[in-house]
Length: 167
Image (tube, rainbow, N blue to C red):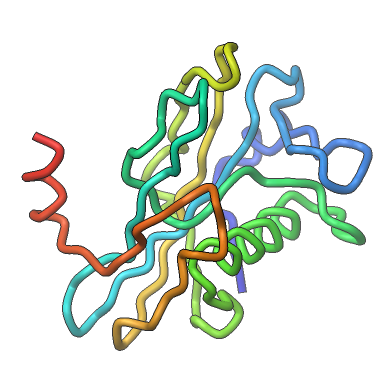
C-alpha cells in the first residue's frame, strides 16, 4: 500500500531505534523523522488542513498543518516503510478520525525532497525531516479533529484561501 521511492542512500541514514515508541531519527540522532498526509478531494479540489494547537514553548503553534506527525518505532515492524505507514495511520486516525487503510492508494511525493526544518520546542531547538505523502478521495469526508489536543480546526480548504491568510 505504501511505496517509498527515495534514494537508497537516504535510508542508510535512518535509525529506527531499539524500542517501541521511540522517534525514528537520522543515524547520528540530530533530526527526528516525521510524515504527513495531503488528502485532496477530487470533486472540490480542496485539501484537509488544520492548525497546530498552542503548546507553551512551541513556536509552530497555530500554523497550518496536514494530518501526520513524528514516525515512531512500531511493534513488530522492522522496516522504515512499515514504521512510517503505521505511524502515519495512527496520527491521521487520532487527528481527523480517518482510517488511511480505507482511503486507497497513498503515495509519497517522491518528486519533492523531504522538508527539513528547525523550530523551538520546550525551550530547545529541534530539527525534523518530514516526508510528504498524498492521496485523493472522491468526496469531502467527515472529520473529527476534537479528539486530539495537538491540532484543531481541520476542514476542507482551498489553497488560494490559505495564501490569502498567510500573506
